[in-house]
Image 1 (cartoon, rainbow, N blue to C red):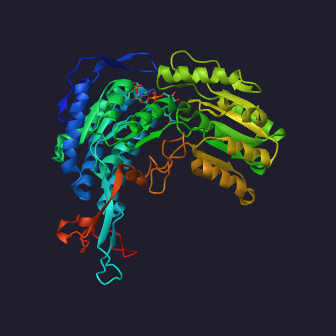
Image 2 (cartoon, rainbow, N blue to C red):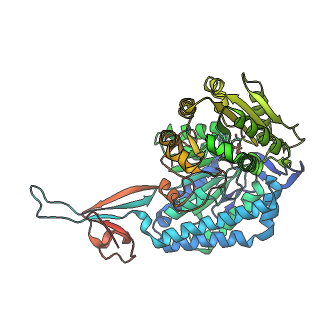
Image 3 (cartoon, helix red, strand yellow):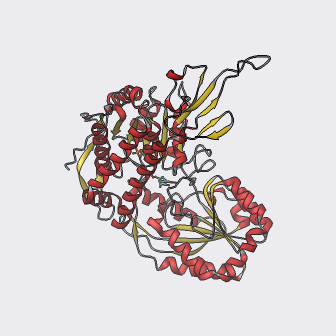
Length: 524
Ligand code: NAP
């Protein structure tokens, strides 16, 4: 497939020449052809107009029709084969195996949503039958269900060129619910975005859907991104990236004359608490596990464990020394972009200078986009008085914080901002005597793990990949798992409607055979 370097606007390609960028191989420093031309503001408007037109018909498609569409996208992505794997590997510096796994995950995610909407009960249909004899006033017939919002803008993430990008989780859930999508492609992987964008666009054509169901634009976040979020025809947004970028776009979405929901996943340090007995009996196993989790994907995961809480003492010292040795022996890795690499370098250099921070190990930085792990240690008293120590450093580093006793551990947890995950390592006995710790962590994080590592997010029905601010802009939502479909929906109620005029999901007959709450009872 030949790459053109042009935005995708419905079934047409962008034509503007207002600026351009090229893909870049962070492993070799080589620029990749072709140049990608930025969309103009007129093209932003054209994509939004098309999406709004498409919404009328796409929002009325059945779950079966949209399931077919999602499966077709997955098939088209798989058909790209090694062309996609090669380009994504070149643009991200990630290992081929990782890109293959991520491609599989992306397609599995699309198929998971296809299964969900084909079954259909996700719409949360509720029926309260009329009671004309109710005194003192008759009860009307009231029925409700979830309906799509309208055109959604999705910002592709740098660190998941496939699973959180053009046909990633936000796009899959927005489509599943019946919303057209406009993607703002991430500058770190323009070619990967074009390949996947064409796979989606072809699925729109093959499904005989309105061309406005999908568009994808190249350009800067400050211009194209903000213009999309502020466009009056856009009704919601999804984002994964930095705290500053997510917050700026969330603020733009909230300050519109008509504010819209904007789901930004931003910043998380994913604390890991290792309780004393686990630390004493499993030092080697825990150090090995932490080393794997800290360095996975060059530490470029939103669930990377950036803080480890240990009770001060010889066991904590032994753990720190061992983790330092293991990190020193870690293979060198390449970071996604030179910008991410320089943020990492700055973060590590700044941490090194903070009062009370001890550098357990810090390897010399590699040339180009190379990532060198770093391990720091600090006492709770210093951590509690320096907010910068709880900030995310995106890359292969972590900070060990030692506490004196249980009370100080709780103080540490209470001092934290919102997180995607929080992990406890301990024995069953330790867990059962630490309810206050579990309660404190539950207030801070979207996912609690026991005796595991936060990296690696299962895509399934029960998954929660979200958390209180600044982990996300809305801690009530998840960006992974089938519950993500709810972020791009709203409840609509039909009162005293004739049966024939109701959506199939709410008709008396229940021809779709879905689960519904009928007069307070869940039934098919
Ligand atoms: P980013 O800078 O936030 O960029 C993500 C997207 O948002 C890009 O499309 C970008 O546009 C746009 N954007 C950024 N700032 C914006 C602003 N002020 N107004 C409008 N649009 C804006 O994230 P990144 O490039 O992926 O990585 C940079 C840093 O983000 C990393 O060093 C890391 O700290 C953090 N990060 C965190 C996570 C996480 O899951 N926690 C994931 C990835 C990255 P442009 O194309 O113009 O840049």
